[in-house]
Length: 315
Image (cartoon, rainbow, N blue to C red; front, side, top):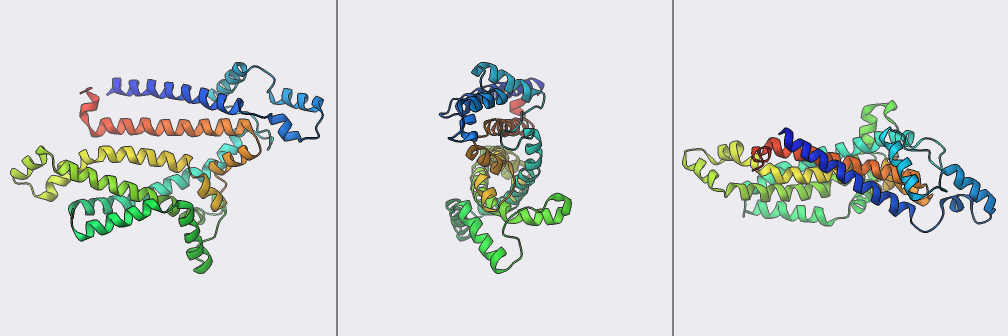
C-alpha cells in the first residue's frame, strides 16, 4: 500500500509540474500586453514601461515562471493587477462559495444517482428500467445553464421559494447560505446524477454476470445477499472514477452556473480575470484548481486500493 501511494504521489508531482509549465506559457505568451490593456490606448510609452516594471512583466519568461511557482509553494500567489490585493485573499473569499457549492452538488448527485442506478440494474429489461434510463438520457441532454434558468423561473420567480441569485454570506447563517446554493447545486447535479446513474447501472449489471456471483448464488445466497456482500463493492470501482471526475468538474467547471446565479465563486473570478487581463489571477486560480483536480484523483486512486486489494499488491 505504501509503495502504491508513493508511486501515485510522484505521478501527482509530475502532473503539477507539467500543468504549471503549460498554464504559464499559454497565458504569458498570448498576444497583447497586460500593462497596455490596463492603461488604455492613450497611455504614454513611459507609463506603460513603468507599469510593466511594477508588475514584474519586464523580466524573462523563465525568471517570471520561477518567481511565480516559487511564490505558490510558500502560499504567495502574487497581487492582483485589478483589485490591488493579494490573490490569496481573493481565493479564500471565493472558495468559501465554490467548495460548498461543489460538495452540495456532489451530495445531491450521489443521493439521486445511487438509488436510480441500483433500482434500474435490479429491474434490467423491465419498463421501469427503460423509463429511468430515458429520464437520465434527458438529464444528460439538457444544458445545465438552461435548466438553471428553468429553476429560477419556477422556484424563484413563480413560487418565490428561493432567491434568483446572489449569495448572502455565511456570516448571515448557514441555512440561508445553503438555501441560496440549492438551485445552483441542483442545476449542476442533474446532469452529473444522470451520468452516474447510468454508470452505476452498467457496472452492477456487469458485476452480476461474473462467475464468482454465480458461485455465490449456487452456494445458497439470495440475489440481494450476493449483490450487497460481493457485487456492490466491485461495482464501485468505475463509479469512484466518475465521482472523482465529477467533483473536479463541479469545483473547476461551474463558471457558467456561477454567472447565471451571480455567485462570487472561483469560476466567476477566473472569468473576471480573463476579461480584465489580470494574468496573475488567472494563472494562480487555474493552477489552484488543477492542484485540486490532481489531488482528488490521488484520493480516488487511494480509494481504489482500499476497494480492490489487487492494486495494493501490484497484481
